[in-house]
Image 1: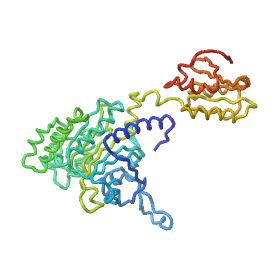
Image 2 (image 1 turned 30 degrees about the horizontal axis):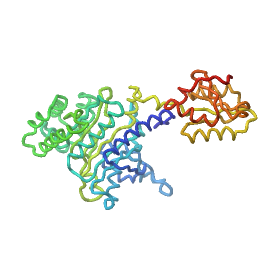
Image 3 (image 1 turned 180 degrees about the vertical axis):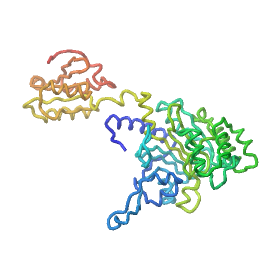
Image 4 (image 1 turned 90 degrees about the vertical axis):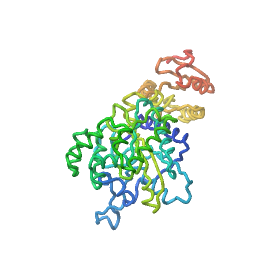
Length: 443
């Protein structure tokens, strides 16, 4: 869990604004949920390993001595969404499309781009089993990644029924499918050898694990998967859905990025159909992922409700954007366009009034809070990266003028106070860069 300094916050705001803009273009509506959920809402939804990573909150007040937990910090944004849909089903539209950008918490081991508190950027569609939903979600995520500067991403897709069929074809017993999927989900993190050890530890026979890894680490196409799944109707229906998804996605911005990947497992236990994951070559792990979870809302509502979603991991995206220098220059611009100075014996209200006028014209203005030597005020502005300084001394006040100094060039401009805002805003987008260089006043 981290502090975010001003530059960090500006960069996050830049990325979030792009994510929100894209999601809204697809008709998704905003939603927010509390940081805390009842513990029974979260437990049992993420599989064995997920349950161990939930931050639990102990009972309070008269129950504090019990050592029991009744609340938990949300682990993701999908289960809270399922609760919301179950609670408000009667007031929500038939097809409910929502996006949600909020922090989640996991008691995980920190690593590059992996933190215990992190933001997820989720987009979900509730109420339809059509594969148009998956195609649109892949397209929305693709649009976001393109606009953030990641043209080289790959959208890997698979299907839980295909996975289950391949596990069965390799000889994995039905009761070992879930633990085997958890192990396979780590293939890109620990490699085939590490997954082999974990499969053995979970009770998968060595020869079965060998067959499984041979299938999942090779170049397994959809057609080859179809041939391996002959006689397994459920699994073959999953192959057909992936074929349809590929065809639909070809009509969207996601089409060129989709790849079938038999090794994609996604360990969360609530997925029931298509699963997706976006990755770039220089990152172990993904930038985001998701899938269909037609049974999750039913755990709260008591009847099945089709649902599908995709989640982008903001922290990993920001790390890579920083490493690739993908942020535009104005994201890291200084905190103000102009510093207004204060002189000894001056009425501070005069400086505040001038700053107020400039802010009303759309400028970002900081007032130096106390009278000090002019050199120190210039030094402060330079250290803060503020490019321009406004000086209103006794001479300027008497003449109704102001001196604007450009600290980048050392040049100064003397102008009427009522003209200062026009002069500065005319220089946008880089305020002050194109100021008229008339040195009517020198200091």
